[in-house]
Amino acid sequence: MDRNSDVVVIGAGLIGLAVADELARRGRKVSVLDERPPHEAASWAGAGMLAPHPERKGSAGFESLCLRSFQQYPRFVADLIERTGIDPQLRTDGVLLVATSGEEAERLSARAHELKASGVEARWLDEMQARAFEPALGAQHRGAAFVAAGGQVDNRDLLGALETACLRAGVQIDRESANACLEVEHGRVRAVKTARARFAAPVVVNATGAWAGLLKGVPPGAAIPVSPVKGQMLALRALAPPVRRLMWLNDCYLVPGRGGRVLVGATIEQAGFDTRVTAAGVHQLLALAITHLPQLADAELIETWAGLRPGSPDGLPFLGVSDIEGYVLSGGHYRNGILLAPITALLIADLLDGKRMFRAGEFAKAAADGWPG
Ligand code: GLY
Image (cartoon, rainbow, N blue to C red; front, side, top):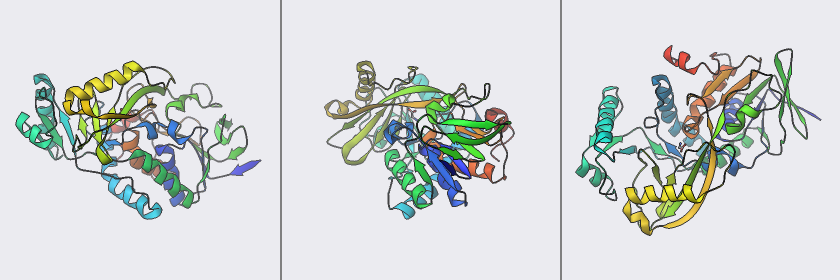
């Protein structure tokens, strides 16, 4: 049986759903296909950290893309709340980048000054000021940079809100789309075939996260080099809230949640598609959390999990058109998929509306030329 759409998005994570929602709101008939349950998506596994500056990947263009997406968040979330009633608890109260050595203190203090000079609200806090800011910080910290452009969102609720919003906007979501295979004829996309149906469309967006490089039917040479990067995470519950706001350290991060919950992340492992939570992973995260915030030693360990980030060779995403007409890539967001969901949706929708043209895999060059403009 054939189903016809204007656009098929493969992947129902935050990126895929945000793109589908934006396209549906611009009047397109959109189908979203996935074969995995939501809890297998990196969007579910992440901590909901929104930090445009700490996770710099050595490209000013990329950092500016991250900041612009962060700036989209209040609008993005307010709109979802209005349309779905689901509140993903957005906070935009900044991020604390904590130094644990003199060398890091020098680097982070220089970074705070550099950000300030570029117009981003940031300031360096010496040890006493940092402790006043976050009283639970351990004795080994050497000060911290506070960057106002940062925050967090409950990514699991955000995923639920986006799915509800998509359905209300008329997007068809098929979560039993096993064995998706791109159908290409004479260099252009015709459809996506799954085990159960054929979804005909002139445009297919690959938003399959860590699996983006494995999409069947993609002609040789057109597969994108995205590979899984495992991240183990855990959640603790403390009697008193141990962290006031998002805290970023060289070797881990801590994200406060409701009711004394704090998320600790994350390992970075090249382990293929393995999503086991291991003794070594949990040990590493617990040791770091307790070292940085000693009072967490008494917290209850309430959840552990692992997810797969969509890694790309240079840490930059693949966004844009490919050599196959109608085959659009929206992948390789690595550690920034949650942060980049709003701007990715706008960029891909603008691309399909003919307002912009950009090729996936040419991010560095495009960014140097001022992309996304
Ligand atoms: N964005 C957080 C992580 O990848 O661990």
